[in-house]
Amino acid sequence: MKALKFLLSPIFMGILFIVFAVSMAVATFVENDYGAAAARAVIYNARWFELLFLLLVINLAGQIVTFRLYRKEKLTVMLFHLAF
Image (cartoon, rainbow, N blue to C red; front, side, top):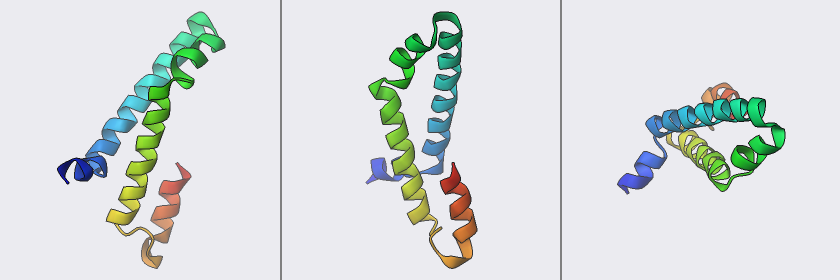
C-alpha cells in the first residue's frame, strides 16, 4: 500500500519529470555528437524510456483520481494537466 501511495504521489511525479528532463537533455547532446540514429537507439527507443512514460501516465491517472479532477469544478485543471 505504501508503494502504491508513493507511485501516485506528487513527489514521484516531480522525480519522474526530473528524470525525463535529464534524459531529454542527454538525448539532445547524443544527437548533436553522434547523430539522430544514435539518440534514437540509446534513448528514444530504449525500454527504460518507455517505462518512464508508462510511469508518468500511471501517476497522472492516479493524480486525477486522488485529487478528483474529474469533477465539474475542476474540469479546467484536469484539461490543463491532460494537455501535457
